[in-house]
Amino acid sequence: MAIGLATLLFAFALLALPISLPIGAMYWDVVVFVDGGWRVLNGQTPSVDFFAPVGPLGYWLFAAGLEVFAKPQPLLLAQWMLLPMTLAGLLPVLVRIDRSSRTLALALLLPFLVFQLLPTNLEQFSSYPGVDGFGIYNRHGTQLLYVLMVALVFERRQRVLLFVIAWICAALFLSKITGFIAAGGLCAFAFAAGRVRLSTAVGALTAFAAVLAGLELTTGVVSAYLGDIASLVGMNEGVLASRFIQAASIHFGIFASGCLLVAALLFLDRRPIASALGAAVRHPLRTAPWIALLDRNVVWLGMALLAGLFFETQNTGGQAFIFIWPVLVRIACDASRHSQRATAVILVLVAAVAMPPLVNVLHRSARAVVGQLMYVKVPAQNLKALDSVTQRPEVIDRAAHMIDNYVAYPRTYEALAADGQLPIFSLYSELDFQAAWLMAANEAVDAIRAYETAHGVRFETIMNLNFVNPFPYALGRQGTPLIAIGADPFRAVPPPNARTIEAVRNTDLALLPLCPVTVANQTIQKIYAEGLRDHVAVPLSRCWMAYIRPGLLPAR
Image (cartoon, rainbow, N blue to C red; front, top):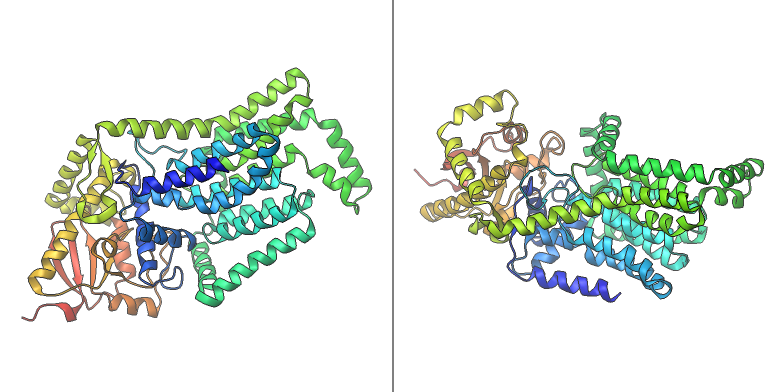
């Protein structure tokens, strides 16, 4: 308990300090939280007032962080804002475990804190060290599943189980729906295995339903969120089978080692498993034989692997399979009941599953911290907290030169966009692109302020025809309601309805990035073209085209 609370206070203290982190691949994903959190602070409700790629919880928590801290490092806030949620579910279980075994409690707590505190994915998209602004939702999902798994595997007090199941499932539902589905499968298995009583299951379901009912009655967010999920499923149907294969291949080391551990446990326990299976077949209506068959480490591990694989089918980065750790700890604790040779085999396989994620996250995080000693700030002082990033001087220099190149040779990038191609296949993973994007956005803020001063206008609502929109936050304005944030036009921007078109039509300023011209930005512009039909195109700066609402144009 003391370590957990001290960690929470330590995180809060760091968020109050002017910390910078080395920018990494796809860092701009963190701006989705900035945009969503700022909208919440301005009275908008996720899914009700804007289309979001995930549930509302993250935006609510991020908004609270923006209120509490003057200028928090955005990625650290996005990473650590979940700590109160996870520790509330984890600490009651660990306090009981600690009374009987401090070692076991620490074996469950310390790895969790590593994964929770370090904003680092298992996947690496850049050869240079940096932090991961992408995959934040996915990290949240696996961290919440970790807490749930600790309770399901180690907790026997049914009241505590009721609280943890309801608490974590509500958090997962409101943050990452695939995580909620994975949690539902694990909870259903725990019930079948006799870990969760019927009264506990009913109580947890009732508490979960009460939370959702309260939110729906007060905000309407639940039904709107379910509508967003249906839209996202419709835009991404037909790819699930291939994504299972992709997830298994990306995380082959962990998944294959886990399967080998399952095979080893099945072999070592083949006689008692066969006996339990025979008893269950002979007495199919009795619960005891089925519980004896299902409530085994090998079955728990198999279920956790399946849940982890399912969760990763929709992910592009995160801390995959970390919630298997509690099951692995249980297996390691029970390994000594086998022969000395079998125990050694089990422990080696447990280490093969458990250690790569932990070592990978620690190694990549250490590289980022050490590498930053030679880095310099990315010039983005107009973007408030978003300027708290650094990178190698040569990367920033290249970013500046690439902006000049985008401006000097626009037809090259227009031709690539017309052919449906990016300048390079991994453009969004390139560190110089992420730095250049921040630098161009920084220039846009100056250009907007200069235009407003020169023409005596003020743009109250600002829209960005781009993946993310930092400008309402940076300028203290409103984001256009009802549109999509985190706007991937090929996967996460639904066709706009009449209300959305009207909201776009009433937008004071829409910005189109030109550094570089990309097919994604052009597609977003086409999606909202009807609402922008009457806006007037005005070159705002070398990297930005402004579309201004007619009523705000200066009289001629």
